Length: 428
Image (cartoon, rainbow, N blue to C red; front, side, top):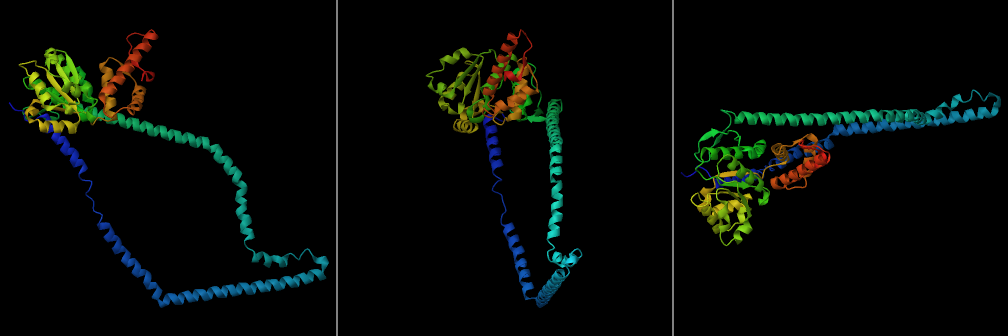
C-alpha cells in the first residue's frame, strides 16, 4: 500500500510556505501618496498668491503702519516733556536746597521711561525660593525612585502572570485537542482524518516534545500513526538548522520504539554522512539487526550509498529503522534526485523552528524525565545560557542539561544528601 503522504511531500509544503511568507513583501503601493501630495500642494500655492493682490489687505497694512508711527510720535513727545520737567525741577533744587525731601516725586517720569527695571526685580523674586525647591526635589527623590521601582516590579509581575496564563491556556488547549473528539489530523498512511491522540505511556522519551507547540503535532501524528500501522515503514526524517542538533530526537524515537515493542533491539548506531560515504560495504551494520540507525547531516550522503542502506535495513535483511537528520534544503534536493527511496520515508519531524520558549519547555520535560526538580530561578538562568547556543540545537542543549545534573549530584554528594536531585542556579 503506497502511503497517502511521505516526508518529501511534507518538505515541499514547508518550502512552499516559507516562500509564501517572504513573497508578500514586494506588494507596496507608493504611487498613491505622491499624487495626493501634489493635489494638496497646488491649492496651497494658489491661496498664498491671492493675499498679495488684495487691495483691502494693503490698506489695512498702511493703517497699521500709520497707527504705529503716531504711537511712536506720542512717546517721543512725552519723553521730551519729561526731560523739560526734569530740568525745571533741577533748577528748583539748586535754588531751594532745604526742600530736598519732597523732590523725588518729579523723578517718577524717569522711572516710567525705564519700565523694564521693575519686571526684572519681580522675576528675580521667585529665584529666592529656588533653593527651597531644590531641597524639596531632593527630599522627594527617594520617594520618586521607590515609586518607579514599585511600578517596574508590578510590570514585571504582570508580565510573569501573562506568561503563566499563556502557558496554562496552551496546556489546556493541547489537553482539549488530545482528548477524544479534539483536534483532528491527517494520517500520513491512509489520508483519513483521525484524532491527534496523546503520547503513549511507554514512549516516555517523547513526552518532553509534546510541550513544544511547533513540534508536538508532528511527533504525536508520527508515533500514533506508527502504532496504528506497525507493518509500514517506520523510517523518519528530522529537519534541523544547518543539519545539526537533532540526533537526540532520533535517539528518543529509537528508545521509544523499543519500549513500545515496535523494534526488537535497543541498539542504536549513529553515523555522520561523510563516515557513511567512506564505508566500502555495510558489514558493520549487520550487528544492528532489529535496532535503529541515525544518519547525521543526511543530505550529504552519496545517493547510491543511501539506497544501499535502505536495502540493508529491509525487514527481510537486517530489519532496522533509518532516521535521517539534516537541513531542509539539502534533504529536499536529495529526495528530488532519488525518487526511488522517497516512499521509504513517510514521517517528517520539523525541529528547526524551536525558539527560546520551546527550548525551556523541552528542558522542563527533560529534567522531569531524568528524575530531577528545578525552580523558576534555574530556568531563568537557562535562558541566559541559550544565548551562547545555536537556536534549536537540541543535542547541545541536552548535553548542557546533563552536565548540570552531574554537578547537582556531585554537590549533593559532597553535602551528604542522597536522592534529592534538586537543581539549583549554581549547577547551571
